[in-house]
Structure formats: structure tokens, C-alpha cells
Image 1 (cartoon, helix red, strand yellow):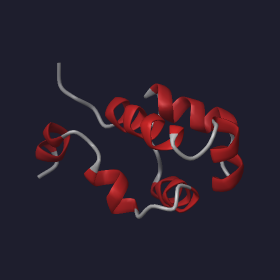
Image 2: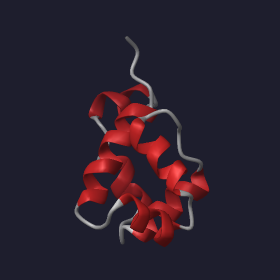
Image 3: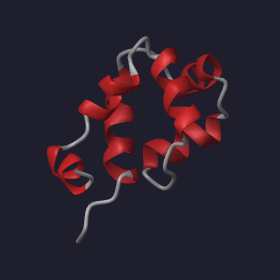
Length: 79
């Protein structure tokens, strides 16, 4: 199966978020709905660019930190 962005991003987001906040806390800090965070973590929705920035800011990370934490195979797909 071809790897998509949504599932690896969701898995990575869940891991990063566990160290910082509960889903509701991340939703509140990022200005996104709880449902949005749940969909992202489940891999059923891909983040928009503005959501990437909002989540990175809420987790006190850079957007590149989120991107670089994704599986290498995914980065290879887009290069």
C-alpha cells in the first residue's frame, strides 16, 4: 500500500501531544476543535498549513519539527 500523509502525521502528532497536553488542551491551545485534533490523530484528516502552524505553536515546536518527525519513506515520496 502506498503511504499517505494523514496516518503517519496522526501517529506522530499523538506521540508529540502526549508529552504536552490532553487532546482538549491541544485543541484549546491551537484554536482548533477537539474533533479536528481527534481526526488528525486518527489519520482520517490531513492538516491544512494553518493547522500545522497552530499545532506547532501549541506544542512549542517548529513546523519543520513536525515534518521531520514523519517517517522517512513519506519524505521520500514527496522529494
